[in-house]
Length: 216
Image (cartoon, rainbow, N blue to C red; front, side):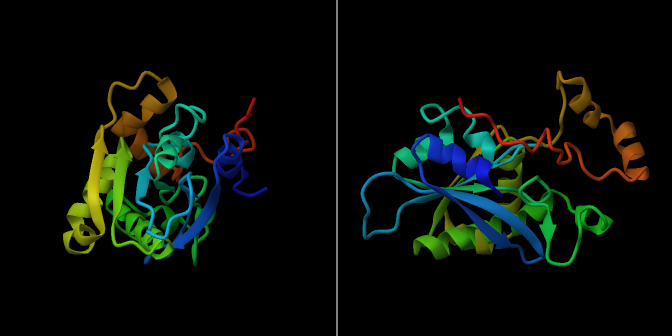
């Protein structure tokens, strides 16, 4: 079942989740996830928080420690509607209104400033859903950098819509990585050679990498 990994993980641990498809102003189609707050229904809008994952990650990053120790589930248990954002280009967000990621090099022609449109589209969906006026945003690692870049690039738009921004371990340069394969990405010469040879994607989807986690 498409998107079954995040939704089934939530269901397994007793939470309700749903995929939320949004389209950015520049045509990228993101599949985010909403984990509904637990507890009784209320006439007031639930507080909403957007979680932005780190480098080479996705929405699952906030759920992989199980029902009692995952930050996403912790927030839902404490009354938040939790919006798990999937940045353009990861395995949940490899679609575009006109471009094919497997055929069109232009699909991959984005940088860290593109976080402006990813976060904007996510916040619009969250506010439309909740009926509220503001959300909180937490970014981890590269997600923290994305959040800071986005909110400082379009201050006028983001400021009235965000009541709290938490940037946890923001990163701009990858150094000190122990994993040999991923550490190669910090070598500018190797990265440039890869670009020349046509490489545009790391950790590309495969039956092994995209298999849903085993819940035991």
